[in-house]
Image 1 (cartoon, helix red, strand yellow):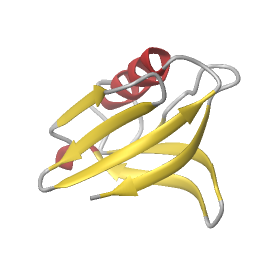
Image 2 (tube, one colour):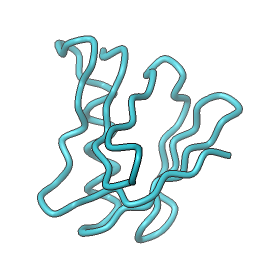
Image 3 (cartoon, helix red, strand yellow):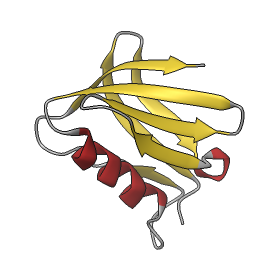
Length: 89
């Protein structure tokens, strides 16, 4: 399993998010444009454009559970998908 995943974004000042896989407790898609990643007491809400959140959600899960990957595994975004906003609460 990967130790970290990286997610490319179009967010000004944050071109790539790097997340510790060991801190991720749950991933859920909550609307047509939002995926939530739970990390202990922190909640990261990502706004996705260009495709259904189901495709993005599956890409995140695939990166998290990759067994023979390197320490840092990039999330392979489906064609045309971009992460346009990230909010930590």
